Length: 259
Image 1 (cartoon, rainbow, N blue to C red):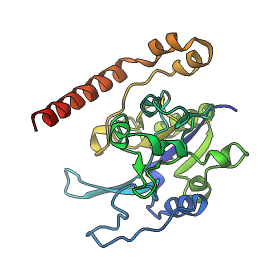
Image 2: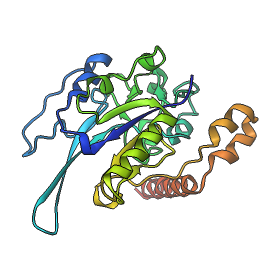
Image 3: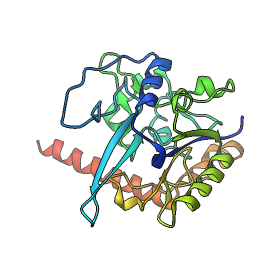
């Protein structure tokens, strides 16, 4: 199947949260108890039962007015997913599908959650404390492989959520960027299979910075021996990310030894 992608135009998002409800309905996820925290944003975080949520972002403009925008937080479905490397210790725990979807299986329950989470620069995977299994958005892999759109995209009435081939979504994103103006851009970058169209520069939003990925890795993974694929994995930004991660682990281990 051709590589697919979700493209989220936050300029069209009204925070109706139909996408949150559709995700729970299709994936049979439990509702969660929430509380008034002084914001319409709920729930406050992702969980094993909440795979996408609308984040409310407020910023005061120079003229004193408030810029209110909404960000649909979820897995980026990285093209060369760091979590796939993190899950290699348990074969079959993480599947990087040809559609571009990164899927977690029941075997994730065998992983060390804290270690596995440290591989994700966007802090997305969540563990079910009852079963130990790790969850996140799976791009509705069961739907898209049967010719359907993801449930969230189907539920979106404003055109904020869009789905198609990666080529189609990139073309759509570039058209919208031209319409929105010079500061509009794609977040995290074109190397992902879930992308957001931001009307303003990325630094104007409280979002995790993009990790540079290597798009050619997908082809190398299919054709090269496993020993050679490792070289294709290590793109410039990814090397930096792994280096930082290892440093944090070493520091944590040092503290444990001292304790």
